[in-house]
Image 1 (cartoon, rainbow, N blue to C red):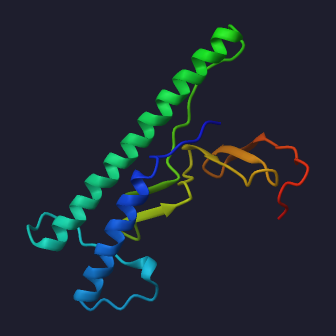
Image 2: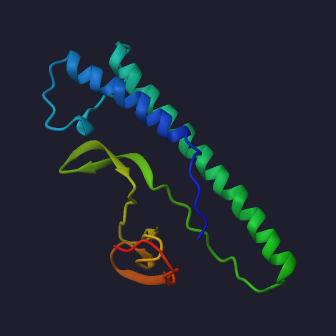
Length: 164
């Protein structure tokens, strides 16, 4: 498993636009049960807040694209090194390239909503995914939705590794 994100770009986008979402909710009188539920409107309106919502969509897309390109380049370099030292030792049948911080427009209860997954991935039937476990404590899993789950790695505990 190779892991890399956007090297802080996505975090900057999220933090900056979350402040904008909090400002929008405050200005429009939205009573939030939790600040983490702040939101921005989306749509085609040229009013300020929908424009900010569309900016968030574009900025998030750019950060996700950068993260995906970063992983692809790292994987190409790792694959070249492995092939150079161990020719034909590995099969590169499929790469599962997923984001663990993402926002996607999805349909739930007959309504289109944006779902932000922070530190999580969607596990829909037929969709390959990887869910990393905590280092030295739980296995890493791969699967398709909730139908097939297989352990990939069971890390050995290191002396002095953090427990629990």
